[in-house]
Image 1: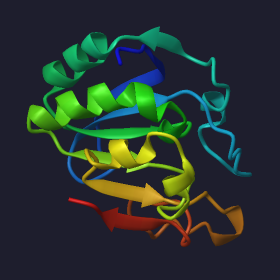
Image 2: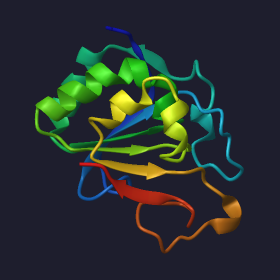
Image 3: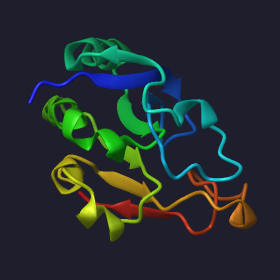
Length: 150
């Protein structure tokens, strides 16, 4: 299972996608297409560019911050992301992951359960513009949950 990843952007040293400074990886592809989404450029599944796990890991190591998976929705690439998540976890970095699916819905998403085995904190649920709350930390709307998995 050595698939390429479809990555729109990687931001080193961001403080908005989880606690502390983090390396945020924005994966391509999102069918949720939430009204008011601030990452609309990540919706197309062919957005960004192909990257190997080794290329992404080189950036993660260089930045030396914990990691956040965002997008788009990483769960649409769950199978391809598993080797990356495994390596990140094995090297001692924590992983946060944002998804528009709820934790309960992920049981029906191929490979999501295996990927969740490497995720420390999941931010789940779609962004709902009517529930937007700028006072929430690390979430855009009040329906989204911070779920500690490990």
